[in-house]
Length: 299
Image (cartoon, one colour):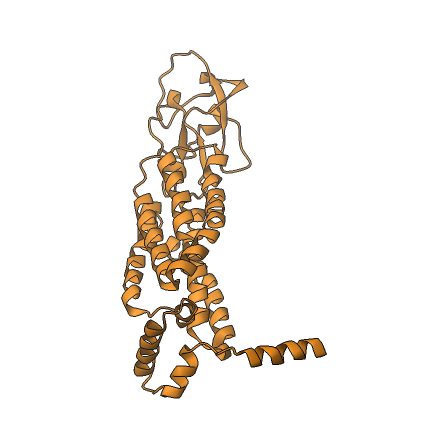
């Protein structure tokens, strides 16, 4: 899950950019990034990016991409860029021509956090109402489907809208998986299961770094991350529902069937006495209640 929550770090990565100078023959966003004449057209920048250029003069001079004299520009006046040249094209900054609009570049990360916050009460209700398995699989499906569609975004607004929709409907994957893992094991192994689930969060970050390093175009990177998630949908038929949730909803027959299946897979046997102890709720009698009350009063 952590790989999907942090994927925007690479898909919306900052890339070096500068003003495009059409007076010097630049007619696209992927021309030579630092030609020899660059300081004739714009101030030197300590960073790899620039957002201003010198104001052009109305002088008729023959220029090429290799030759653009300083006489074409008034170095005493700077103007903001109206178009950009980029050093690379592996980010939404290039595809959607964000240039110096830094707030638009980082907005997907902010909305990702907002979506994660919004989903927590919703996924908690779904998990308690319909079961841990339904909550997990539905979250994974939403995450995979919306994430895959986002890889085909045709403009910035579509990308951002799908980003917040994906996190709102799919960010419950980790919390659902965490609860599911903790309830699948007994008290003895609960700490181990919880620690393992938490460790997987860091593993996801490492996997994301490897995928982003190997697949640099942001659209293909998103596809590579999300397509394998569709395989997890098959877990709906592989995993049994949480026994504890079934018992809390008094679905004793389903809980019994799940326990028998677990015993069969582990090549063991659950005695009838143990089965009754697991499935039947404790009988509370008036006498036992009276004893508890007396004990409390005595204290």
